[in-house]
Image (cartoon, rainbow, N blue to C red):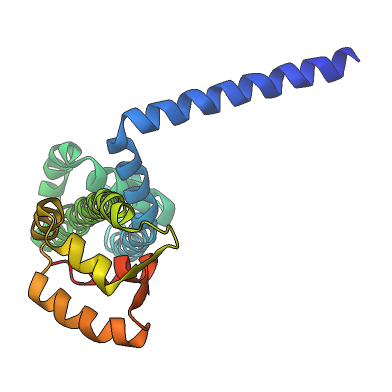
Length: 230
């Protein structure tokens, strides 16, 4: 009995933590955008990291072969894993490159050229590409969330206006009812803010009313209006 009561207490504490987390997410929508952006970018990030790993592996083998019987072998490239670790540290933390430059002075020039090509490929190209991908994905997700919010607000305003003329509350709008709301200034203002061409909307609804026997469902009408958003 004590164990069961303890488990219930633990579950209750978990529920409290979840509720607190949900409140934080509601008050900070930026966190939701970041979480969704990271989720969407997972595939691109994984592909970029695989590219980095392959590049480090190839250059690790190359430096392991080149560094034989040189001063760099025992210190940096004693084995392939050791070479990969060295290249990983220099690519992720470019500040460490200064420590390697002095040691490359005792080997032929092409060692330094190959090392510079590696830094150029991984640090300045691939990792910066990863940053660009993350920024782009977060921007796309943020724009999508903003678009969803605008659509939700626009849809709610339209439902309020349509509910005024839908006297019989059958969730259908007739031609006469639509003509009444079409002259309402709040509807015209909302349509203009959403970028809806009123003349095009009237032309499309002219044929749509004929298809639905002059009685369009509210949901269908909203979908038509949302499709015409600019």
